View 1 (cartoon, rainbow, N blue to C red):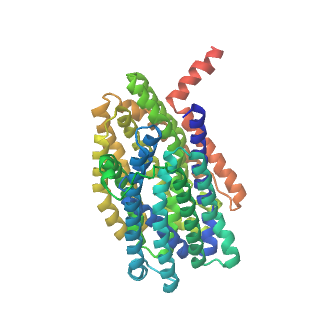
View 2: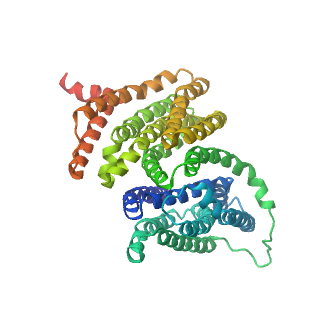
View 3: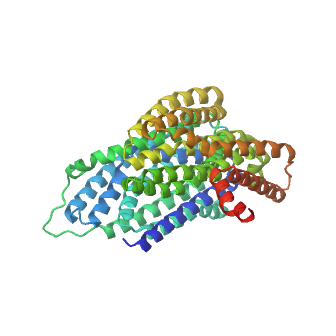
Length: 503
């Protein structure tokens, strides 16, 4: 693969990802306005089900992608690859049928005993839950096909398809409901149509890409081809399963505790706060391979420099965004939605999750260092310990204090992880870096916190959304400038390049 092709693929992938994030967040106020908070709570429950269903992946999707890449490199025969694909297809189909079937079978229990309905008709909810079961199963199967398509490096094609499907799934459904009615049944009916289209398109493309075998070669039906890749698959499955539990558990628990309308507000706030994590994703994708290469070249000082420099950069951009979003949660939600009641209900939750996600972004850095050194043992241990602490904490907090309790549990555990576990990991794998690392972000965080406190007490946000938007932009710009000026690296640049000219 040429360097140009790689850049094009990366650009296409990021373009589709950014488009998906923007369009999914931008469309939420319209859903809430026309469907109502309770109906949107059902949409949030649907999103949570899809997240939990990924627990059943067992690392199979990245495995088929990796094996596809190996076939492209000539390390796998056409027959062997087709046998593996057929085996994994059987596994994916079985899981889709069992998982979707169980959701379909228990739809009455979910509607009557789990979800806390207020105004939605029970027959409407049953209809939507049945469609959810089918959609979840279909989208589960597309994971296998996406793995093959990406493994063949058809990233541009896949990105275009992702953009089209996202357009249909979000603004497309609004156009559909404009003609048939803004009801929860019409929303999920259209989602089923989109899920079928997505499944057919990706399956068709996958079978076009599959290598041809000689007629006398028998592909057969056997699970033996899966055995050699189980170790790789289960390693990925472990990490991804812990991550899914950590990110979806609160949503699952609260879906059975909160009234569905309140759950809608919770879902909206958590999704907005998730934008903090999305901002940090491109940065981690860029520094991880760079640090791994430098480590392989035994350039330990440069690895350390990249690690500390990236921490300062993430603090200035991502952590500052998290702090600003937490401080301005209510005006941001009001400017975004124009709904005073929604902003008042969702703001306290958004504050907690914005701060928690900002801390999580920093807490992920030791993983990048472990990745570069090729040893993830401490990362696995940290995930297990976090899960052991977070799961009961969220269950207790959610049952006793609802969404606010879950938010406080999430924020507290992330803070403890940052303060204690990150320091321990640094001590074990990179002695003497811990104090330097904390110095990379604490000055900026403290400065932004102080400036935010001062500004929020002197700034009265307008009830006119356009003016309030400009006030938010001014507030954010001031905090960004303060964060950058507080950065040691920026100070050093100013000393070397700016002040030097006048001295």
